[in-house]
Amino acid sequence: MGSKVYLPGREICEIPPEKIRLYLLNHEHIVGRSKAKFFNSVGFTGQNWQILAVALKEHAQKNTVTRTEKTEFGTKYSIEGKLNSPDGRNPLGRAIWFIDYGEQVPRLVTVHPLPILKELKR
Image (cartoon, rainbow, N blue to C red; front, side, top):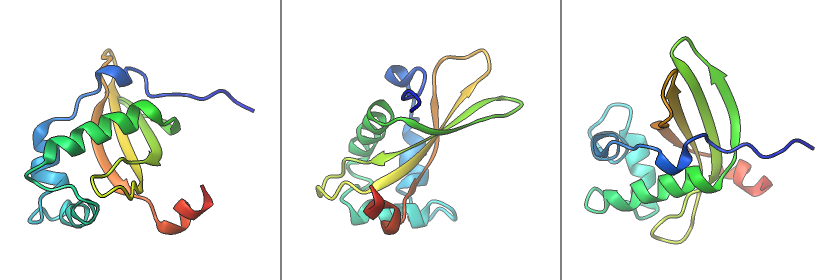
């Protein structure tokens, strides 16, 4: 069995506040609105956006990388695992992080809720 691989630089990962407030928790964003609905359903709101930032950093620190992809600009990392939520349901989520070549700091690209079916298999 292979060894566990964690996100490089996970202790210093960056999540711009705008990524959370204007995308993940924005009900008006064309792509982010379905994510905002999901995050609201488990207790994250625009008023407590910092709690989502902390939960996403914890998600990156506690869970292993499930997939990597090299691109012409750097490496993309997928991480799947439970996301600590204010309502205590702690749904499974997939976070995508990116590290540019020549850099060490991972930055959040996006987060997707994982289907219930996948959650039942864990």
